[in-house]
View 1 (cartoon, rainbow over the protein chains, first blue to last red):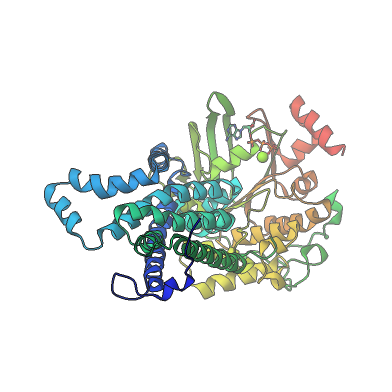
View 2: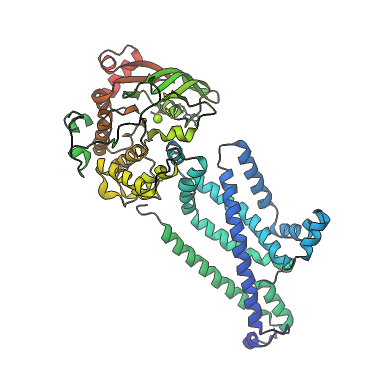
Length: 239
Length: 286
Ligand SMILES: Nc1ncnc2c1ncn2[C@@H]1O[C@H](COP(=O)(O)OP(=O)(O)OP(=O)(O)O)[C@@H](O)[C@H]1O
Ligand SMILES: [Mg+2]
């Protein structure tokens, strides 16, 4: 292999004209982080609601919850990304479709919504499992004290369930972070997309993807560390 | 048996100083900081009328009829699987039933118009496995429902919880979490938590059967005290010492039916049904 190593490439100006290749990768990193965080907000909120629905006594609520999870978990993420980005604007009423297509940063908003709803189905599974892992008597004790169903979830079941599922939620967060790279297919200029662009401009493929890999590993390590801190913060004494 | 561990009987009216000691070692003081709240009717506190319940095809309760009047202590016993837990869970509508009627203080529990959270907040319940909320401190366990259900201000709820905690001999543990207490201590906290809601009646579902033997006495002492102070109680238990000491009536259940419903003296003296006799001889021979 006749390859010209050039680790100095990161400090050379990129042909885009505004900064070095390093700046290019950092702006990709910024989009990756912002997309992951925004998607997680949706995933956590929607996933909690769907997970709770699946543990309610009513048949109807359970069916809605199950349908959501099966739908979003069983379609490949890449297909979902295309459905949201290319198909949705066409099937909506024309004025809405046009508005969507002309939205500035459309790839970003689409990626956030798509990833959020996809990850929500996985969070929902964890929330359901966490609630069902609690002793049956906990729900009864809350109910017997006069708490409403909503209050029982809010003050008794969910605080306990979240503590149990913190480790699997951390891995869902990491998956969510890495899945942002799928959004390069709809034009989001996130980290992987920027590494590819760098490779195309400079032909330094190893340097570009080594940098991307190292950056992914570092943010994953940071997430794991933060999750560990949270876990210790919310740990219940005597357990 | 645990009855030997209990302190001698003292009249209820006698003023007692509240102490921080475990209830087994000294007087408990008054558990009801106020008289039980005034009730709506002069009828029975709990009326169970011809109640039947099925799980699918399996009939758990068959035509159960009984009542508990104000201030009465009724012990429910019977073999495992006879439907004791199911019956008392029907009283505060934790379990639905398909036939018959239950009223608590004149309110029908199966009526769609009944405000169940409100009704349940007036019916204290103590479980076999305590069911304290593990993520909340003892103080928060005691004040959560007072605040969220009764709307009491934080300070008032905490003061009330602390007062009851003192009465069950656990004031020093207020800041701890349930996982840091022994089973007997947790169950006393659970009783205090129920009492903090000013219930008009208390239901107990085998409150001592998950406890190590040496902790049974401290929980029964609190329950005896409560009975003496005039609380209306329905208690599922196999502690016959407790039944002899404070029960007014004993209900014996078998296979979902109320086989015997008798005054305490009558039940222990000469149980009418053969099944109750067999059960009693088995349980008392331990
Ligand atoms: N959710 C349920 N679904 C189906 N059957 C049930 C359910 N809960 C209880 N049962 C059955 O109903 C019967 C009565 O149960 P219950 O818990 O009331 O008995 P118990 O008298 O309290 O017994 P124990 O002394 O063991 O606590 C048992 O045969 C039990 O198997
Ligand atoms: Mg039972």
